[in-house]
Length: 88
Image (cartoon, rainbow, N blue to C red; front, side):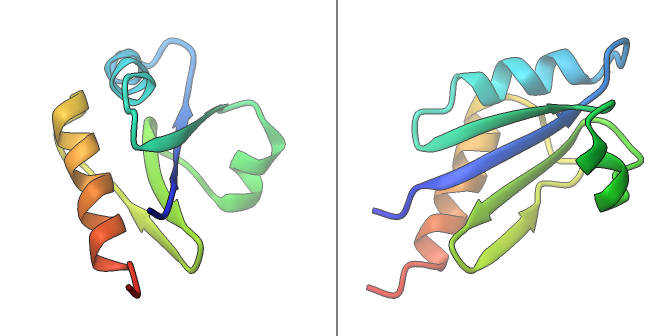
């Protein structure tokens, strides 16, 4: 099975970020990467709102958008992207 990477860009003091960080930390079907807003890559990528959640697969990148920030919803999004992008 393809292993996704869930990237959560977050900012200290953001009231919406803790639920996203907690939800992503519980995902078992992906590698998780939390990146703080003061990391240089955030500016390079033009990330301006927090949390921003991306799901990365070997040849695709998906923005999670403003969907619910709970573990079941995020995990389902990851699984949908994996199954829709699996060439086998």
